Length: 128
Image (cartoon, rainbow, N blue to C red; front, side, top):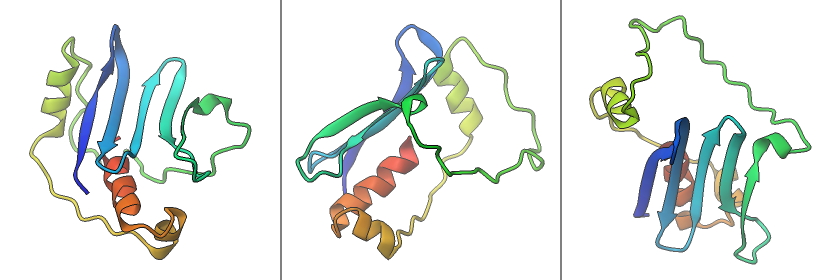
């Protein structure tokens, strides 16, 4: 579903990164990362329409995610940080690419068996 997607940095913190997405049905999701941790914004699953903001460093359980991507196939050096972060991101990204997303039935069920909510999650997650 259509949404508004924003990304940038935390004001006054050039080493941070931030991304937030707003959707027509009221969904909001995002993350901002600083030296203090990764702060996550999202809708709670309690069906009351509430949202939560938390630092993932404060979680009492370990995140089981393990990134299996290696840096072995990078064929060019990663650019050094520039004073202008927007310029750096623009130069590092190169050409615009199109992506195809596919969501499974388990994700659909986890998002209240709602196509809009599932689509918002998938598109919002790819912009953060």
